[in-house]
Length: 288
Image 1 (cartoon, rainbow, N blue to C red):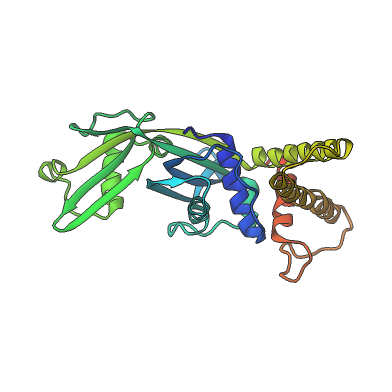
Image 2 (image 1 turned 60 degrees about the horizontal axis):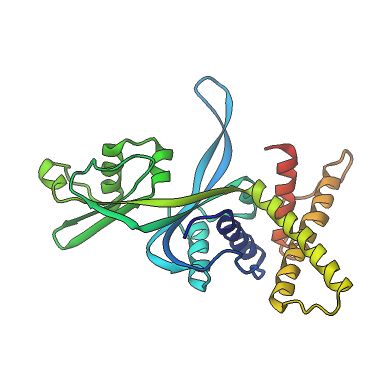
């Protein structure tokens, strides 16, 4: 199993559907059972030491499971939601975050697992590491996929020591202690998709749905799969949110438009999903 853009699109679909309180479209990738990592980052503007404003990505949630997950299952849906809404280190992702997010999906390849004898017998950028050690009766562990180690700029020693601390160990890292640490290296297949790419995907799927609907009308003898009809309906509804609410928000941004609250009220006929899609389209047009 390799990570694909469709895997990331599905992660976005799941998060957006959860915020909308709507049903998610079914997956469009091959089913498999695999350990994986789902992580989210948000693009923000920050001023560097030279006083220049730059775009940087800040962590917005992640989840790693070394236990295989069936991708066409409710368990995978729960895994995605947990990565976005239940990471105790981050606030839950909100509708306002969506236009600035990117999703990283990394499928961990079990056939590449190898327990190494020397703590430096792995490559930064190629291998992830699972750190295991025991103190008394307590077992500790920490996992870093290769993408995380590379993004943090760690060398091998820094990654291992950081992992030991994050696992909860506060004692001295003596040679005697380090000799008890077990490292399992592994490789991943990974893919990253931005919100901009995701919204283009939604637009494309809506166009494809319209063509299929037109074909079905012109060829009434063809029996269309009910699941395909349901999927097209879900994506059509989502595209309607984009079109109608983008126009509404653009109208409010025109000079002389009445000022309104930036957040829709719970009683508003506009769903959260509509607002976040409209915000995303505006963000894409503005190039933020």
